[in-house]
Image 1 (cartoon, rainbow, N blue to C red):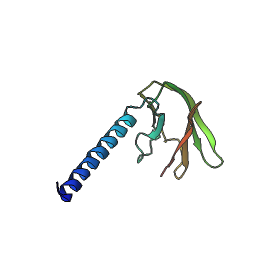
Image 2 (cartoon, one colour):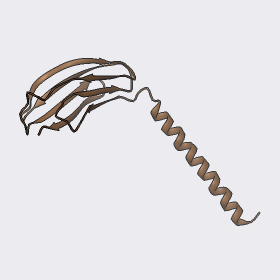
Image 3 (cartoon, rainbow, N blue to C red):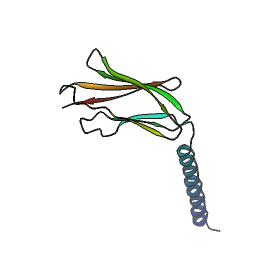
Image 4 (cartoon, one colour):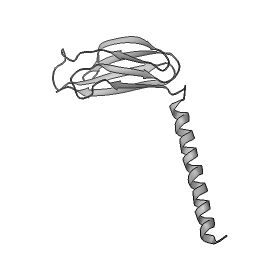
Amino acid sequence: MSNEKKIIILLAVFLVTGVSFLFYSENKQLNSTDGGWALYFENPKSTDLTFVIENRGKTKKIHWKELSGNPANTLREGDVVVSSEQKSIIPLSGADISKGEKITIEASDQSDGKKEIHKLLY
């Protein structure tokens, strides 16, 4: 067999091996049960402050706070239990907040720590 055919076969084996590994690792990450949780605004471009807590792991109790200004003043807070592979939508209105004010949503649980999102209202 010529050297050119050996190189082509070797490259094909590396390509198949690499694609298989990437497929396996991506599939493993998507189907992970210990994926933690995420915090994000439902509509980041509007003045609406409704936010979402999405849970990719075990059922968690998450405490959230709506903070305003510097130093931060707590406007509202609460607890929510988010089941595994579910999301919870927390509806908040920005109607009572003055324009140009920075709003912070802070959420925390016992194991994964604290996460924050920010919005500047215009």
